[in-house]
Image 1 (cartoon, rainbow, N blue to C red):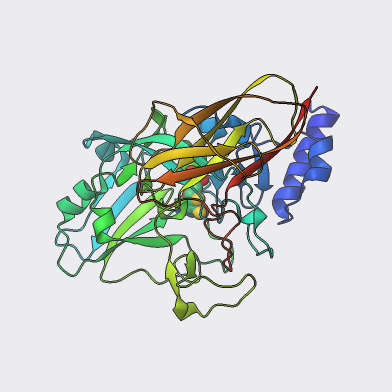
Image 2: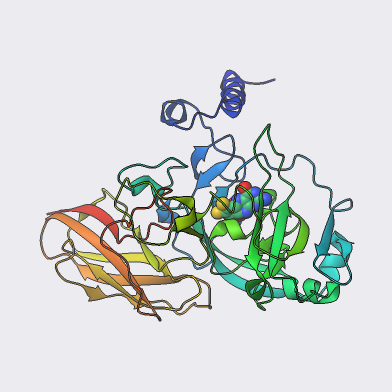
Length: 387
Ligand code: MTE
């Protein structure tokens, strides 16, 4: 028997799934609309599923799968039987082939700890507002991804000298006229020893929301490069032309004024991530007891190395170096902490600022672009310290 509450829960889920409406605050107060296995995440969209991680969860080096954000452009595949699944490798190659999951699993495995961030993370803070999922801070997470190197599959197929880009196709269910999720990466990145066909996340099979049975893993690059539910790898002579390469995931070649229109020919495809940091504790708006406080967070730098994090306790007038935690890997974020003895009661604006091995650092406010991509402005948390 369904309880009245369960019935309402299911009915409201079904109604929401049938709509594209995003704001759920009215419903979330009344019903528990969390996604099974993803409890606690912020639902940015039910159709198609987009889940954001609350920043408070960013207190471990590896983000547990149940806390890992989800970004889907369309419906997830409804049936995925690993016994039936096939991955084909073709295009500009000498020996096209396809292989099943059992064969893929027998290939030599490699692990890469990678910070995966959606290019739209932070879009909700850009001004003027731009269309798209209004992500705030948590369309990012760090996982240990494992699987064969993409390079091993490409070498088995024998890439022809004409092969310059590698295209991935996902098995997403494409609704109506929506173009399929297909993107490509340049051959050099595809042949890099850290680029994987990942079958595992944090030591377990890749969960369905994250691309089961296999996904591309393009470390240090925007999340959209890492195609989920991979079914086809195709070597191309040039960059793939399609919605998710253009107009999707492009930014102006030159900085533009907020609100300014940009011609498509004056844009380029996004590749690697920016340098960026987040404050995970204390929470924005927290009211804390006077005394000792540990401020903590995460910071990452795409393909570069993160070298330092500075924290301001006075809205940016002065900065103190944070301590970086020991866990680190080439494409992974680092946890950081700063111990602070609050000087007196009152309101404080805490800021964090990361710097990487190339000298890149974070701007004070978002650098506007028409899609609100790669917003890496300083993170800010306002707190009240009680007497
Ligand atoms: N792959 C497919 N097939 N379909 C998608 O919608 N979304 C991309 C990428 N791979 C997507 C995809 C985007 S925009 C991001 S940010 C990452 O997957 C998110 O990965 P996650 O959902 O595992 O966190």
